[in-house]
Image (spheres, rainbow, N blue to C red):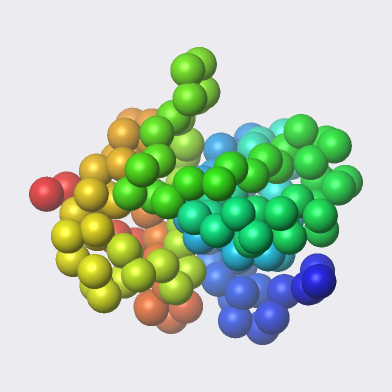
Length: 143
C-alpha cells in the first residue's frame, strides 16, 4: 500500500496554499497518500478525503492509522456529485482534486453538479484546485 508521494503528487501538495489550521477537502483521494501529506502540513487543521470507491476508502483508512487517531484526517465514501456537509460539519477552506472526471472536463454535466456541491461545502472565499496546471490550476466556482 503506497505511503509515499510520487513526485507528481508531491508537486501538487507543495503547490496548494496550505497553512496551519485550514480545513481541506480532497476529492477523489484514492489510497490517501496526498490526504496524509496535506494533514501533516496543516497542523491543527483537518482534511476530509472522499472517494466514490469503497475499496479506495478502505485502503486509505488502512494506511492512515496515525493521522486518523490524531483527528486531523478523516475519510468518507462519497461521489462529489452527491457530497453534502453533514449536520454540524464546518465548511472547508480549500478543495482539491487530482484526475477526477467530473472536474477535468471529461463529464460536463457531472462537473456542473460537482461544482455546485463544492461551492456549498466551501466557506466564504473557499477555493478549488485541480490538476492540469503547473501542477495545479484554480477553478472558478461561479456559474
